[in-house]
Length: 165
View: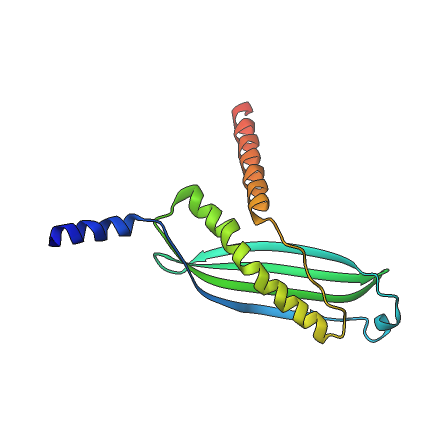
């Protein structure tokens, strides 16, 4: 019977496991360089969103994933505000390797972090006396797939260059 329990325990260790352990704001900044004059303008902002993700291995099965967002809102040529946030998360991931691990760290984890970053951005924009900003959802799977394709194309281009020399 002890052998059966040990075998079952070994099977569970080989099963893919994923757990969110912590979500936190790593860095947050807000600038409104043209206040208070920008409040006199008609509010029809052009909003630009830049995003990036990164990850670090903390321990055997722990990873930190950081979603970095920069939101710039302009009214005409004037910058109304700039918000920068690094939304971090610690994830326990085991039994997942290779491309699946890359997908988890590059797409799945940022998808979990995004609503928290969006809420923090909306709150700080509101505290800056600007109308609420609700960022549209982001398809991190598509972004990850594009980045992967770009890396593969670059690698193929480099391999082709080496063959011609």
